[in-house]
Amino acid sequence: MANVKFMSGENVPLEMHKVRIVQKLTLLPVEERLGAITEAGNNTFLLQNRDVFLDMLTDSGVNAMSDQQLAAMMVADDAYAGSATFTKLESKVAELFGIPRFLPAHQGRACENIIACTLVKPGSIVPMNYHFTTTKAHITRCGGVVEELLIDEGLKPTSDFPFKGNMDPDKLKKLIAEKGVENIAFVRLEAGTNLIGGQPFSLENARQISAICRESGIPLVLDASLLQDNLYFIKEREAECRDMSLREITRALCDEMDIIYFSARKLGFARGGGLCVRDPGLFAKMRELVPLYEGFLTYGGMSVREMEAIVVGLEETMDEDIVSQGPQFIKFMTDELVKAGVPVVTPAGGLGCHLNAMEFLPHVPQSEYPAGALAAALYIAGGVRGMERGTLSEAREPDGSEKLADMELLRLAVPRRVFTLSQVKYAIDRIVWLYSRRDLVGGLEFTEEPAVLRFFFGRLKPTSDWQARLVQAFRADFGDSL
Image (cartoon, rainbow, N blue to C red; front, side):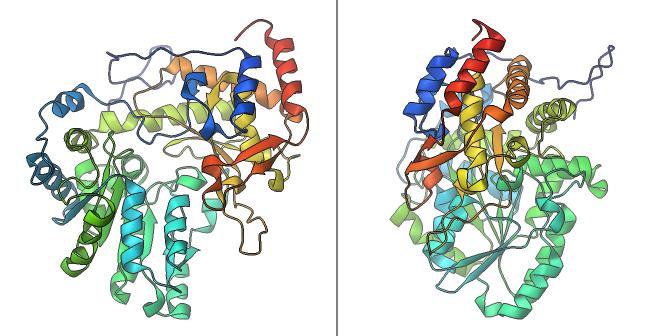
């Protein structure tokens, strides 16, 4: 990775790319921001993009494509079946991951559906380092149960442990011994544990888990959607890997896996997805589901133009200068907030900067969704759209009670090659101001609550007039500023 030092001694990330296409942004006045979040039911997913200044909701499908990706889209083989573009994608995946059997899908959760339909039955157990919302929903829909076997360090918001996404090998051995091999559908490792701050796992940990799975005859599944950030952290933080290329780390990691799936909306900088299956018999079973749920076997719900872009994007993922930009921006943002005393998840992970809402808003009970309230408050304060990753993102228990999340986080994603450093500094400024006025922020309660994945389209209202008072404070402190 490029090592560039400033004579001033200032430590800031330097973009190793130039911007050639721009999109105009609009920053609404604070009163209009209050109106927009109210209209959206205090759910940042329901905001209109025209009303958002900095969209830090997700990095899924909103990463900037490179000039080479855009050029590749113009030479796609636009065929329903037998497209040469698909063959390119299949070959690139086999080259990087070392598994020749590839099935296309329109995105990562489509792969999760195929895996769950094939391997999960009522009573099945799926151990994982940590769950993701859609992954868990697919497993429970098929009658399975998720068991989280994260190391204890992983749930400590403030830490200097480099691999907080590691699965605990002893917990896995104990679970297999107690529940029986025949009841374990598969073991899943998520590269870059989304819901606990984008924290990575190490190559050594993957090898430990793989050895247990192979000894027990249990398939090991890798969710590689956030693989590029995990590769960066393995190279940066794992001593034995510092002299390895990203390509070598990728192959070493994938050699331990039986199934690999990914959302190309994250990995590959485009829109699509796919899964690789090592076992030919299992591959044959999953292949039958692709035409049923996704499309023909050589497009799987993807545009061939997107497939051409993914081929280039996967190759660019092996470029250290390209994959380092996201984690470096996130680290800068995290470090600046730490300096200002704002509670954030450390060490800085991938995907985005994560505000610790339980410490940011200790007066808001989890039953009033502090991470969701913080998301609404930050939008009012600065037009910045983040994503709640806490109790609001969980599902209720069968008896209707709330399942309180292990962590209450506001995720501020940093899409790759999208924001400038001055925009990141603006977000930091508004977060620091909001922290100074945190006592004004109150909770939320549902007015419309879907039964499944409620965080996507549920609607809420504030439990008091705290949002109006926050607007008044903004005007008192910033005058006529946007």
